[in-house]
Length: 166
Image 1 (cartoon, rainbow, N blue to C red):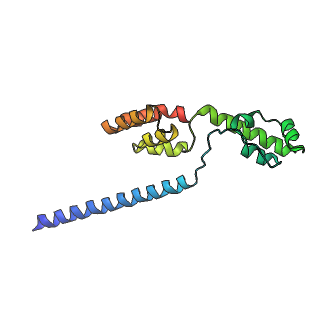
Image 2: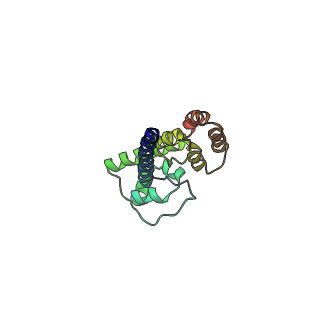
Image 3: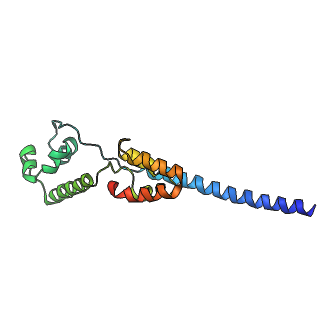
């Protein structure tokens, strides 16, 4: 009789731990979904579009990447008929620098580095690799196979390949 009560206490303790783990995992999923909702996705380069507006901000939104990176304040003055202020010139150069850095790193940059590492820890980095490579290439399915074989090789592969994306 006493042995049955020990078993009941043991089972109750295990259920309590399982409830805590389930609560922690659901909080993690919720926080990841909140983080994903705030992500910024940079569109890929498109064909040049003729602009109808004359403001420098509108020009940078509607032109393709190559033309935006070659844009100078003098060209903006020629296109709009208005000189850029010092603040607008600095903003243009900073935006061009950020875009160049983004293009150098490759990938779409749609997933922050911290989220990538967290997903790699949980064995889900292959999803991020697939999304960032548009599901082409070998990295994502190689990582999936490594994760399915055993978690550690997949995690190590994800950390090694991370330099390609960030």
